[in-house]
Image (cartoon, rainbow, N blue to C red; front, top):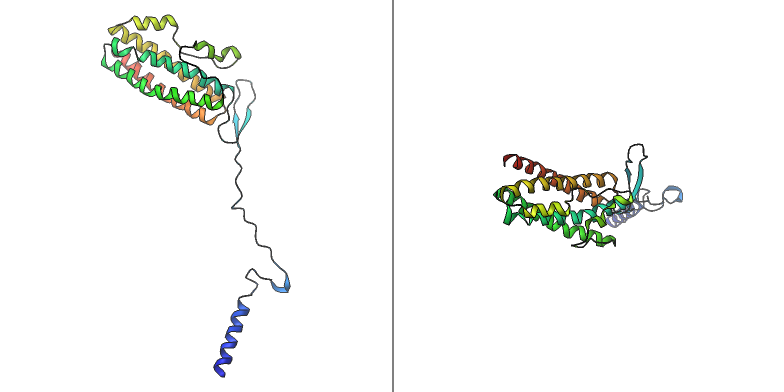
Length: 230
């Protein structure tokens, strides 16, 4: 009997301990305490506010991107102009295998083609996603020059006469002319990329422009060194 009484007392103490005020049950005095509200499940805001600097004497503007992909006119203009710009670089590079005398010029042309050919597909895909006109091969590049609408101009493009002059050149003359014209062509792309990184709103286009700017600036340096050795 003494053992039974001891066990009963122990069970009673355990039961009372399980309902102490430190648990989720009623606190002292019969009052209930609401469980703390968790903020871990609350999604953070997805809007990203970016400040775009204005031109000299112009105020800055604020752009809100809900997914980091918001486009403005300058973004569209850059991609539309860069597509025929790349295509012309590919046309110039395609002349090198049969006309260049220096193997370094041929190798450079191959590298330019290998870099810009895939980018043509990317540029066309980006425009298609935005539902805007995609420049087609053979179209007049000036059709997509947005300078007449008050936006950045297409820069570095060879005229029809300049392209014909390059196609007629051979040997050392071709090597020198190719490098000179491609340096100017690349410089135009670098300037266009710098413009859209300053005034565009799409993070995706800005990343593409940075790749163009850094990659083609490096190629300009290599072409200038090569030109000095011819």
